[in-house]
Image (cartoon, rainbow, N blue to C red; front, side, top):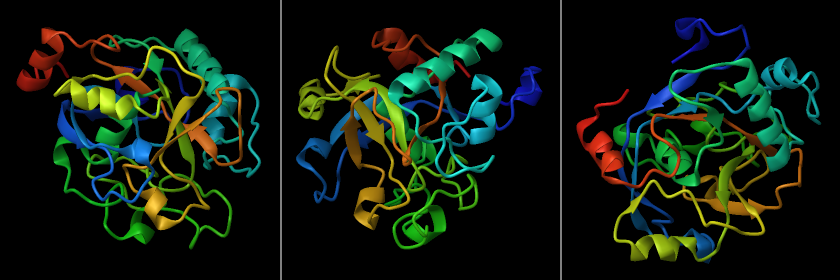
Amino acid sequence: MSQQNDNLPPFPDLDLIFVEGGEFMMGDEVGDLWDFCSPVHPVLVSSFYMAKFPVTQRLYQAVMGSNPSYFKGDLRPVEMVSWDDAQAFIEKLNTALSSPQGTFRLPTEAEWEFAARGGNKSERFKYAGSNEIKEVAWFGENSYDETKAVGLKYPNELGLYDMSGNVREWCGDWFNSDYYKQCESEGLAVNPNGPDEGFYRVRRGSCYWHEPEFCRVASRGDGWAGKSGNFLSFRIALSLLPLGNKGPEAKQAVQTNEIK
């Protein structure tokens, strides 16, 4: 799905990749991350769209009329944006654009990890697209302590870029350190979208100063919704089913792939 195909107004760098729904094992399969990255548990997500890149400064400027980033560059990810700032951006984008599939939003962290792992095309890489981190990520050893333009490293199996390294990304969910245990207790968590409430929001991915172990697709963290930093950005998603749909229609849609 792209702007050109849908005859959308000319917002730059707004390109979405279709992610066919499916089942995967979510969480730290190696066991060397924080306790709240475990246990590994089965998750089923419905089909959705995910942005090819984190939101660029050029796109943010086109929508918001300003660029708060510390590391300036049209094609670098926008940073110095809080979770609240991301919501304001999405609200303006939805006002400006209309999609037959629904409204733009932040991805859930289950969607984020499923997409980072390559979805149903996953080759079970350690990082998003490779077992060799330097092929797919800007991180502490190669970034020279700054962000880089999006899309310069190899994409993952779905054609998504910069999901290991460069910038951390906000997700829509509330954060709870015991949430994975709650999901595991369900047997199969269907379209999990986080706790009903909390103090912090989920951050996924890694950034330009992280060590390799924290660039793995299972790595997760949290942050206050009003906090920004020159390592924090976001990418957008688009539903094919209502967010949080956990009913039989969600399972059927995944199993039959009837919606695209």
